[in-house]
Length: 204
Image (cartoon, rainbow, N blue to C red; front, side, top):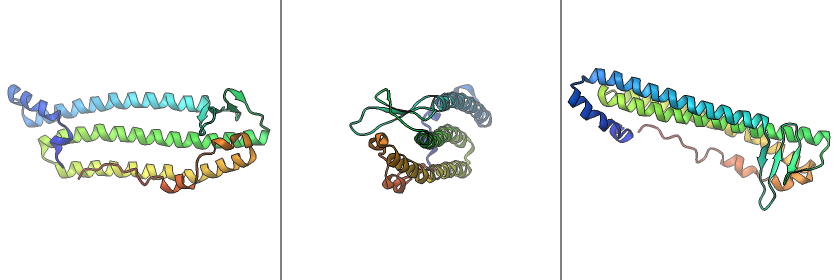
């Protein structure tokens, strides 16, 4: 693994070491603290953004689309709005809409978790790379990064495992609520292809 390529900003630290007479160990400690602080800040910003998105999903309308169709939305209480106008539904159909909505919300939540984990991995990898430049512990760093990448891949697989139930819910809703049919755009290929192109880049 070429640590300098992973973290070009490290080059900026080298002149400071030479000019300041800083020892490698103290520089490593300082760099570690700086990266930790940056990681904490980035992590908080991401968490705040995802918390806001989760609230919007839970409390707001979930938008769905169909090719050439007016925008549709599913409300938290299970109403279907098409082009801003509520479509007539009975109690059973509203329950189905809420069930389908819950699948969308669950997958969105899982996706946000994966996004947060990926962002943390990126920041942590940069910090590990910086420390590795000074410590020479490239093998240990590669293992730690790859272990984290493996966890993200496992999370992605769990997301894919949600899709069959979501597809079944969509198909049942399209069967029982004709107004929803143009928005039932998911098919078996979406289930089969999930995860095929999702590869977490690991340290070589």
